[in-house]
Image (cartoon, rainbow, N blue to C red):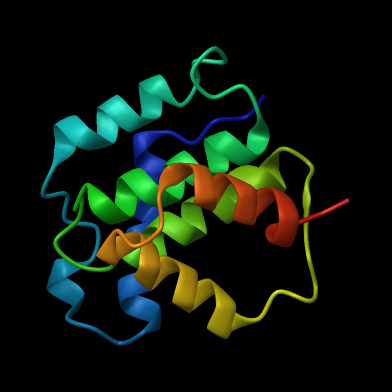
Length: 129
C-alpha cells in the first residue's frame, strides 16, 4: 500500500496556498511537526486503521484538527486523503461535489463530525466502486 510521506503532505499544503492566492510566505510552513510525523506513522497500522476508508479519513481528520500547518489545513487534509486513495488505485466518485467536500471539511474542523462518520462518508460517498 502506498502511504504519503512528510514531503508530499508539505508540498500539498504549499500548492493549496499558492493555488488559492493566499500569502505565499505561509505556503508549506509546518506549525506542528510532531502531529504530522505521528499521523504518517500511525496511519500505517492496519490494526487501528484496517480499511482504506479509515486511513483516508484519518489523513483528513488529523491534518485538519491537528493544525499541522499555519494555513490551509482543511484543504491539505482533504487533498491528502484523496491523493492517498488515488495512489492506491481507488476512483473518486464523479457525483461528489466541491460543496460536499467543503462542507465535510468544515464539519471536521468544527468537530461536529467524528472519525467514524468521516470513515463512513469516504466509504459511502467518496470512493467509487
